[in-house]
Amino acid sequence: YGTIQALTLLFNELYFVTLTFAPEYYESKDTTKQDHVKRCLFKHSPVYIANIDYGGLNGRLHYHAITTEPITSDMWPYGFIDCKKIGKEIRDRKKVAKYVAKFSNHALKSTNKTKKVLYSRALSKLIQVS
Image (tube, one colour):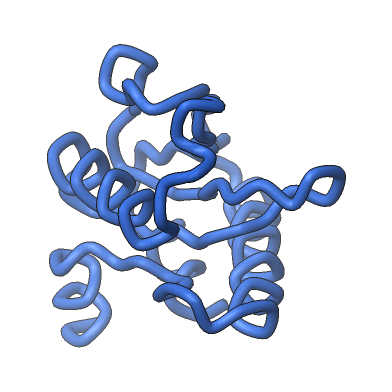
């Protein structure tokens, strides 16, 4: 929770992003899907944190992320994307941090298939410094 909260307090502009996969990618390996997510986030947002999640209804893998840049549908060819700007109020930032931390903790417990929480290198360096 601390790393996520630090991200939400360090940057003025933040976005909450959900990345899903289209049916043609359902059979792809989870590690392949993770690679798609990492490449997209690395290319379009210098600082991010993302976590793996599985839908409650069908158990389908998707990712939630906090980014410093908006991610749009033309940047994500693998399925659906939802990107919302996070409010600048401290309560909004804390709410999002708690939400992502909750799902990160859930994902860490749910499976050992792939790395569950993805950090940009830039975020790792920022957290070490602060």
